[in-house]
Length: 205
Ligand code: MG
Image 1 (tube, protein in one colour):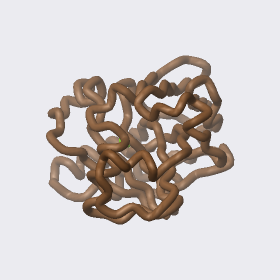
Image 2 (cartoon, rainbow, N blue to C red; image 1 turned 135 degrees about the vertical axis):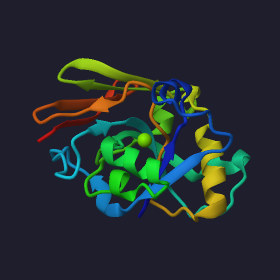
Image 3 (cartoon, rainbow, N blue to C red; image 1 turned 90 degrees about the vertical axis):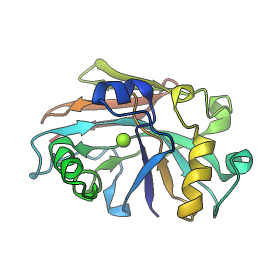
Image 4 (cartoon, protein in one colour; image 1 turned 180 degrees about the vertical axis):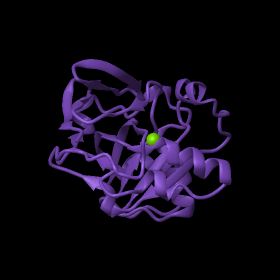
């Protein structure tokens, strides 16, 4: 499986990062070795001094998808979750400044915590564009997102990405982070939720 991550998909995050509003979806990938499951602890990599959390709605693809029309993209998924797109922000600034790819700052081992169990979208009301999610660190709310605030909706993202890359059963789409990103430190406890359901609960070491 592979992970497709969307960047710059919320206006409030683009404002906090001084990104321009994209005219088309921005995406990159993480390999399957980026997955962190079982609420295992996240170890801050030695190559960064500024490792940021980004809390994102995650969609699990349930069939082969190639160049699908946006109208039919809803047929490609039935389960969702919340995951963290850990980012070595200092290394990302270097990549961006030099115009180089983002793998070092985004695709490293264990950079994508996801829950073992996803939730059927039907149990959450069935509307992919009406989901609230959040992250608490050490009991304090640091991020809140609403899928309806995305610049490019999940169905639009799947249609766009599948023009370039065939999606397969089990692939995950990280749909971008809202505002409120920030660094983690050793000892932090991260709890992510989706419509009130706890999705992740793990420690930083
Ligand atoms: Mg992200």
